Each structure stands twice: as structure tokens, then as C-alpha cells.
Amino acid sequence: MSRPGHGVAMRIALIGTGRIGAFHAGVLARHPEVGQLVVADADAARAAEVAALTGATATATVAEALAGADAVVIASATAAHAGLIAAAARAGLPAFCEKPVALDVPGTLEALGAVEAAGTELQLGFMRRFDAGYRNARELVRSGRLGRLHTVRAVTSDPAPPPAAYLPLSGGLYRDCLVHDFDIVRWVTGREVTEVYAMGSDAGPAMFRAAGDIDTAAVVLTLDDGTLATATAARCNGAGYDVRLELAGEYDQFAVGLDDRTPLTSAEPHGPGRPDKPWTGFLERFAPAYEAELDAFVRLVRGEAANPCDGRDALHALRIAEACEVSRRERRVVPLAEIPGAAGREG
Ligand SMILES: NC(=O)c1ccc[n+]([C@@H]2O[C@H](COP(=O)([O-])OP(=O)(O)OC[C@H]3O[C@@H](n4cnc5c(N)ncnc54)[C@H](O)[C@@H]3O)[C@@H](O)[C@H]2O)c1
Image (cartoon, rainbow, N blue to C red; front, side, top):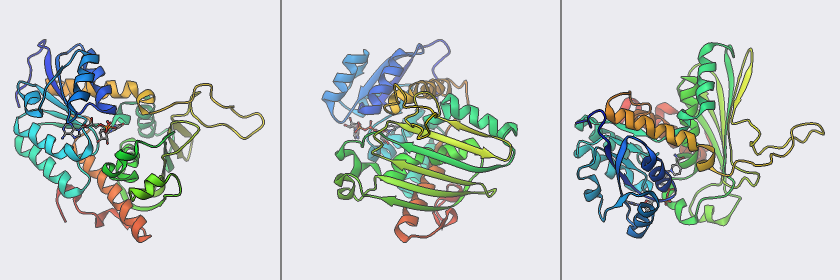
């Protein structure tokens, strides 16, 4: 893998210019070390629109975008991730890819195998690792201020569902949405999930039932030191975008995502009232984190920093999501050891 020289502005290819890709295009276009941004999308008009907004160059094909690039940012629809990761690896290019690598373990292992064989880097888009609150929480756990951690509560509630067309391609609520919570619980606590029990409900809008998906989920995760974690997700949370992580220990408890914009109103007569400006969505809530993760990627491409979130992290989070699918389907506790792909191998 060759690296752009220090002080030389790099050329980045961005593949996929939909909701998140358009946001990443803006971040990359503003980055002082990105000299040239080239964008491509299966929908050429979409790529042209984003190029016009950001000053990027749109190309007709992915191959044209990759030619001459120093690195690749993949923000296409999920089904194209694994193929694009492999194409970047074959071209010897470091890649940043939105979650997930693939919707199943074999597809994930194949893409990670291509990266390993090429000796390139793959950074995954678990942006919560770059959010100030989650970073503080990780330090608090390590500092011992909570004492023994006994309970972790992760919450991800979206104010409105994604477009109906997104659902059949998303992999479902556990893989698409709760995968962020699975990653961040591992990262903040430094523990591994050993078993899960997952439930889900499709009692909301009919489009979830039509896609074979659920709109609300509740999961119990057992960590390898016995700590219990719960993770809930909801696609139709009218109060706003609510992403929190609560950590309770023997000495103290802390919450990430608890501020004057948290869309949670106390039912107590004198408790905190309704926020004036509740968080509206991921692009607003996590804007600084998206910027920081791409800055980290630029530094990784330069060889100035280690990979903050690699393919093995994506595999761990996906295996937890897969265990949730099995658990919900079979209505039982599922040990992670049952899910293929442990230690990066099938079996
Ligand atoms: N980290 C996060 O917070 C976060 C948030 C939203 C989405 N995502 C992930 O980002 C990805 C994109 O999600 P989105 O909401 O932007 O979806 P989207 O549907 O808005 O955009 C996807 C884009 O990819 C394009 N595309 C599809 N196949 C392609 C291919 N083979 N080559 C080039 N372009 C292709 C589509 O034309 C579309 O413009 C998904 O994998 C999703 O899981 C992550």
C-alpha cells in the first residue's frame, strides 16, 4: 500500500452519494488535506448533484473514480460494500466503509480476506467511537470511578422510519441499527458479548411487516465478566432522535446522550421539561463524530495513526446481530459461540 507524501493533498474517491454519502462528501471536500474529491454513484444524476454542491468531480464508473485515488470512502447501499472493499483492496487502496461490511458472516469474511491478502487498511464507520460522550464514558469505565460495572443500557430511537425502499436492503433492525449499540457496548466496556436474548415487534407501520423486518427491538446481552447490558431500538420515536448509553456501577452512574436536547420529558411535576430543540436525526447529533472519523481515516491513509475501528470490529458486531436474529426466531438465549466467524474463521 503506497502512501501520499506528507504535505501532498490527497485524492479521495467516494462511492455512494445517498443520505450519508452526501454528508461525507461535504466533510471530505472541506478537509484541508483532501485536494481532490471524486464521486461516483449507481445513480449518475445523484453523483452529479452532490459533485455540484461540494465542488467534487463526478465520474461515470467506480473504476474511473478509483483510478489515481489515494484512498476510497464507501457509502453506497450495503449490498455493494463487500464488492467495493475487495475492489479497493485489489487496487492497493486503503478504504473507509460505512457499516456493515456485508449482511452475513461469509460475505464479511470474504471481504476481510481480500483486505488481508492485499495488506491494505479497512476502517469501519462506527462513528460513535468518535463522539465526545462515548469517549468520556470509555475513560470513566477504565478509570475505576464507577467501580464494578453491573448494568449497561443502550438506547437507539429514530424519530421516523427510513424510506420503505431502504428496508429490504438494510438487513433488518439488528444489523442496520442496533449494530452501532453492539459495537459501542464492546468499545466502552472493553468486554465481549457472550450470549444474547432478543425480541422484536412489527406492530408499527405496515412497511416493516412487508419487508419482514421489525420496528422495535429489545435485547439482553451478557458480557464476559457477567455485566448485563440491554439494548433497545425503535424506528418510530415521535419525541425525537434519542441515542443514549447508561452505565451503572457500584459507586456511580453516567449517561451518554443526556443533555438539554435529549427528547425525554420527565413525568414528575418538577422534573426536567420538554427540550426546546430535541435532536432530529443522526446527521445532526453525530456531525462532529462523522467529521472526526474521516479525519482519523485521512491520518490512517497518511500512516500517521493506527486504524481506530477495523474489519474484526465489524465482524464482532455483525455476529452479535446474527445471534439476535436467531434468538428472536427461535425465542431462546443464543451463545455467541454458536455463530460462525469467531476469531475471523468459519466454524
Ligand atoms: N454510520 C451511520 O450512522 C450510517 C447512517 C446512515 C447510513 N449508513 C450506512 O451507509 C450506507 C448508505 O446508506 P444511506 O442511508 O446513505 O442510503 P441511500 O439509499 O440514501 O444511498 C445509497 C446510495 O448508494 C448508491 N449505490 C447503490 N449501489 C451502488 C453501487 N454498486 N455503486 C455505487 N453506488 C451505489 C445508490 O444509488 C444511493 O445513492 C448503508 O450501508 C448504511 O448502512 C450509516
